[in-house]
Image (cartoon, rainbow, N blue to C red; front, top):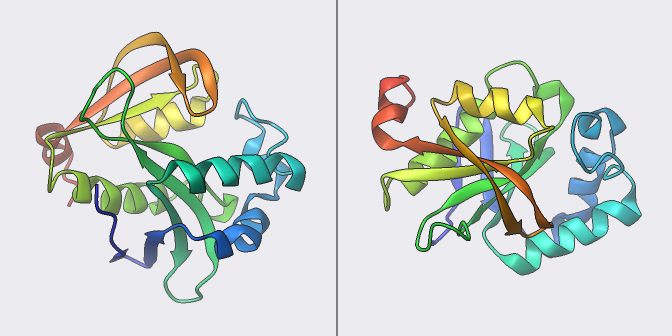
Length: 176
């Protein structure tokens, strides 16, 4: 998938660069971001660095900035789901806590999902069963839970909840 710059509703999403490391680590350095996440110590630089290296080397990763300030507030990644050859997934995402609870996640995912729907009619999300925040956020997009499977994703083998968002469901939820 060709990733191009995306802009909308106060955010700029660009392909991730090696030079984004310090700003992304600063955004990720709040331990409370990771409290409900399986990688609870990812706020530590020595734990964040391999995650960043993986995102950069795996490809499909994007950096998210506030449009008005240029401040990096998180990242995400497009990837090919191992069980859906030729498909596209969105994941490996985080945003700073000052953007939780409002429209930020939906807006950022809207930019990313709309780019997918230019090529395919569905997008996949794989969520750790313990990550309730991501499950709720994904459901709010209109995605539906499919099943839980043992899969090997970039972070290794594990049980992953599979969610799918079709273009039809996306439109039904009024997302543009």
